Amino acid sequence: MLEEKYLLMLPGPTPVPPPVALAQAMPMMNHRGEAFTALFREITAGLQRVFRTRQPVLVLPGSGTGGFETALQNFVAPGEKVLAVVTGAFGDRWAKGARALGYEVERLDVEWGRAADPGELRERLAAGRDRPIRAVLLTHNETSTGVTNPIRELAQVAREHGALVMVDSVSGLGALPIEMDEWGLDVVLTGAQKALMCPPGLTLLAASPRAWEASDRNPGPRFYFDLRPYRDGYEKASLPYTPALALLYALRESLRLIEREGLEAAWARHRLLGRMTRAGVRAMGLELLVRDDRFASDSVTAVKAPPGLSPSAIRRTARERFGVILAGGQGPLSETVFRIGHLGYVVPGDVVQALAAVEGALALHGLPVELGRAAAAAEAVWLDALREQAPAP
Ligand code: PLP
Image (tube, rainbow, N blue to C red; front, top):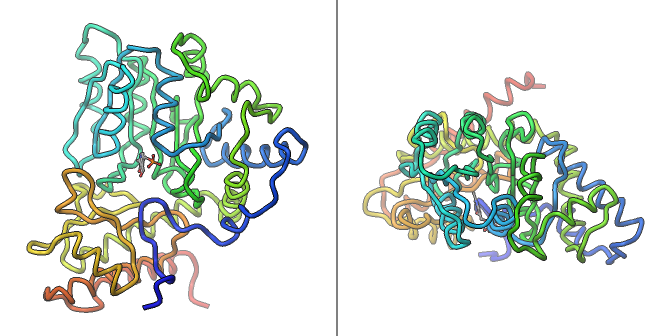
C-alpha cells in the first residue's frame, strides 16, 4: 500500500489544505514592523467574522485545553464557583481542569450521547446554593459523543442567572453555526487544528465586555497568559510576546479559504457531511451514540461498534487495509465507540470513501454487510443537496 496516501477523518487534527501548509514556509518577519500589522489585521478581521463578534479575537500559542485554562484564569477569580455542564469527555476535562486550578466546581452531568437541557440548567442554577455561580462552562460540540449542545438556549439561561457564559467551541467554530455577540456568549474559544484547517498550536479566544470587566477585577496571578496586554495592544497590532509567526501565516491562508467559500456555505457543507455520514452509518446497520438527531453533530459522528467486534479492530483495518484514519472512543467509550471526523478541509467524496472503508472493514471481519449500501445512502443525501442547489446542467 502507498503509505503516504491516506484519508484523515479525525475530529482534529484535521487535514491541512496545501496553501495553508505551504504558507508556513514564508520567511520570518519583524513582529514589530508594518508587514506584521497587515498580517495581524487581516487575521483578526477574519476571525471576528468567523466568531461573529465585534470583540477582539486573541490568538495565543497553545491548544484548546490551553484556551480553557487561560479563560478560567483570566475571567474567573481564584476560588470562585463555576458550574460545568458535562456532556462528554471534553466537558469532563474542563470540569477537572477548573478543579485542578482551585475553583469550586459544580457539575451538571448529562448522559453521554445526550445534549444538555436548558430547563435542567435553569433548575440547577435556581437551586440557590450558598455561593453564587460566576461562570457556566459549556461545550458547544462535544467531540467525544458527536453531540451539539443547544448553546444559544443554554447561554440565555446562564445569563438570566448572571453567570458568565464560557463556551468551548473547539470542534464547532467554523463548522457549526455560532453567533458570539447575538447569543450573548461571554467567552468563546477554539483551537486552530479543527474546522479552521491549520496545523495544531494555536488557541483562539474572544471575550465580551462583561468578561473583560471580570478580568480587570480579578486579582488572580497571571503573566504570560494574562490576556490584558494582548487586549490592550490589539488596536495597534502590538503583541506582548513573539507570536507563532509560521502558524499565523497558515491561519491567514485558511481564513482566506473560509472567506472564499463563505462561512455560511461552510456551515451548509458541514451540515451535508453530517447528514451523509449518519445516513451511511445507519445504512450499514450500525448505531449512532447520539440519542436525538436534533442534536447530532455535523462535525463528528460517534458510532457504536457492532456486537463482537471492537472499535479498535475496525479502526485498524480501516487504516491498514483501506488507508482511512478514524478516531477511537474516549474514556468510558473506548471499548464501544469509534468516531468519524468530518470537519475542516473535508468534502462529500471523503465521507463516501470513509464509509466504504468502514463497510469494507466490517466485511473483512466477517460481518454480513451488503457492500455499497452505506455509500449509496450517503450519495442519495448528497444528490438531494445538489439538486436543491441547482438543476443538472
Ligand atoms: N474541547 C473539545 C470540544 C475538543 O474537541 C478538544 C480536542 O479535541 C479540546 C477541547 C481540547 O483541545 P486540545 O487537544 O487542542 O487541547
